[in-house]
Image: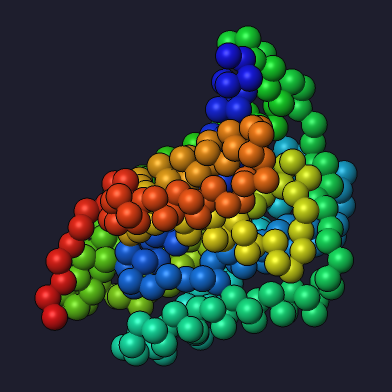
Length: 299
């Protein structure tokens, strides 16, 4: 029984990382009806940015709480700017183009980011240094690594902040208005381009945040490090209901728990495949996702 709860906690921690990346997918889709396949590679770029910044300012400084907080904020800001740049240069000129054109462009941006990372940082894998150590904590009889508790806490705080931004602020209301009807929102005086740019920036920041909290566990980085996390987060977004933020969170948690239990079983070789097994199952049984609602489009 203790092993069950241990795996459950580890699965929730992994699922929280998937959820933060999945929310970026689902926000962009909710506003633009676009699957931003470059989102996973923004996650990868955030890894290299964080590693580069930590080496520039000194590992001893980043191991302090203030230094890690500075590294965290700086990486989020740089990834937000990258998201804005991608939206402005790659997607905005195609706003009225057929969806397949934007989809192909998203794949092209993904390949471009991977090629740039390969040229700048090289193909050799790198590892995040140990930023800080935390003692093992006993929680309800479970021995948990303190880093897992930090990951869960940071993920929870970021999700609460995101919920507050989307539901309690003017820009959040504008995001929901643009997602519901872009033309009507523009007629009501909402700057649609600014709101879409903000959505890309916020999604990129969440991807970088997911990377940094997982980097506490000495995350391995290479130019293709965002491929599998990006695909799994996309599956999580579809699983919960693409375009639905709470659904993306639920989908990410389900993905993380399922992957952890499979990895600890006799079928550990299926660890990466479980995401796509769940995707096929949910598309057959409930195409709109766990929290999504089927919509009818007039043609």
